[in-house]
Figure 1 (cartoon, rainbow, N blue to C red):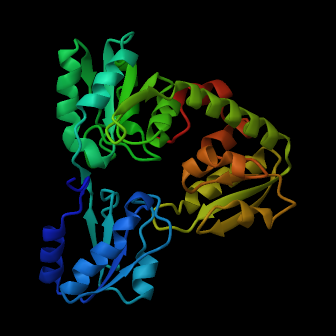
Figure 2: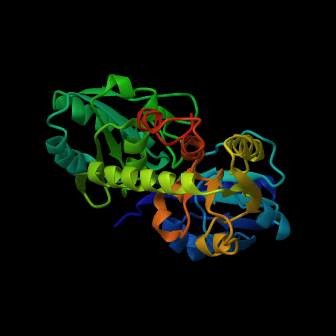
Length: 335
């Protein structure tokens, strides 16, 4: 069976040779970490000292720059995501997007039965499948669907979305009846449903099947309302500042702190790299937390935390700056 993901080994060797790199840090998301030893061996055979980062990697907002500097690496190779920032890099970074080479036809054929009630379909995906959107669009058109692919200009590719940015879906939500997410798992599809309040179906080429995430998204909505109501009763808030390179939003944290204090809440600023239940349990006098790092931590890991951990928009609801109805209409993610 051919490899599922294109790890661009030939390009990788050429880039390393062109740059004269001698020590390289390899960073992989969880699904690609099993490839770490093979990739390291390929680079070692090319005369490079290769080190694989074993820390979790949650996206292009989570670049291991500090780790690369600490290890004296002269090149960082980041797999599985596209470049988000154009800022100057202290250590040069090569992004290998790891495009998938799987047929979409079986999954989309099954998705069509779930999309039967809807005429206008919004098509979205991750970077692994952006090159397949044309194929997916053609299959939907043959089934007499109209297809819209959004581009808000936030991300590298038309129709692309990432875990915290659903602008490609938001920009077309008024023009479609439902969304079809092409890719693996429920994570991104639930994000689409939360961001747009539209029916959302997954066409999973890895499992060659399709399914709806509407019920799961509604369950998340109920959980989030419970967290907001519980947080609103609290007096002491912890405002979390993420220290990862793409998640540090100190100005946002200061703004939300000001609004909470204006609403009569006491606040403490807390800085950390990983927002985890054990880390927050060290502050027992704090009633609720506001997470200004990755919003998916609040949404997807809510049952793991003993205290409410709100997104920025949810904290605005708790502070009386936004209404729950506004949140339902505009979605959980900031534009």
